[in-house]
Length: 312
Image (cartoon, rainbow, N blue to C red; front, side, top):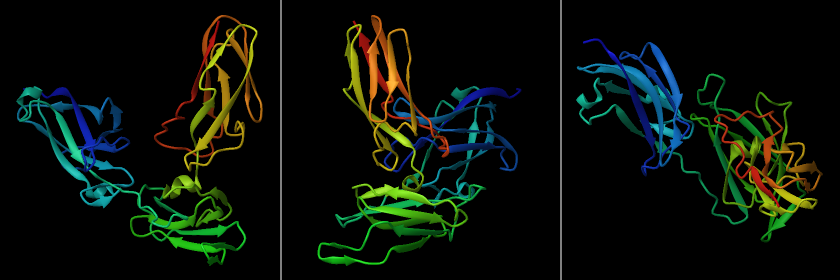
């Protein structure tokens, strides 16, 4: 009987059986030498999986799958897909499979973000990779405090420079003063200095701290209910992935757009938006990232990036 194309799914969960999205799943032949296809797992309902079409048969056709995601250990090594090889068997018809389908579940050990036990400090930690996607060991990171010497709980805070280096897994962590402002330089990017703001939290992703992007927005008011001819001031609060609140309406980082300009017009001011109701109907204000200097994969977008507008 000739092989028949079948739909397969590779589900990814963590050690607590929670779905893990953003895992790169690559499919190879049985020997693991010939690449066939790849896809990322995505959340669908309450699960995360990547879907493929592969030939199946009875007896089954075997394939090698390799999984990788930074901060997730498959077969014991964080983010190293060379240690995460597994074999799957694809049946046609799927009912011939031992579990009655061509669905496969793989468990990974997710990285638990370390937290600082000192209420004055925030623990920044994260993973770094090289251009080939491998863990980047011995990467030097230089952190320079941008505040004057201070006394915290009776202790003198001295010195301005902190140096850290990634370990064999490309991992580094450091405790920094909450609400502190620092300047960070990374090896190989010496001309690219980042000004960072430490959140008032027990922990933060070091990568997000160094390379923040717009992550979420809140609105005041939470929705716009207007009558024709009304003008309404709306105050957005824009937050980065480092939990830092940007200044005013953050016009250098985001763009505001009214989706139906026949219902309302929009003016973007440095500290607020001005909505003017034009005709009866409903529309929305949409926020998109304007600053694309940092590329995030996968791009999950901006949380709460739509403001409902109703005009009567």
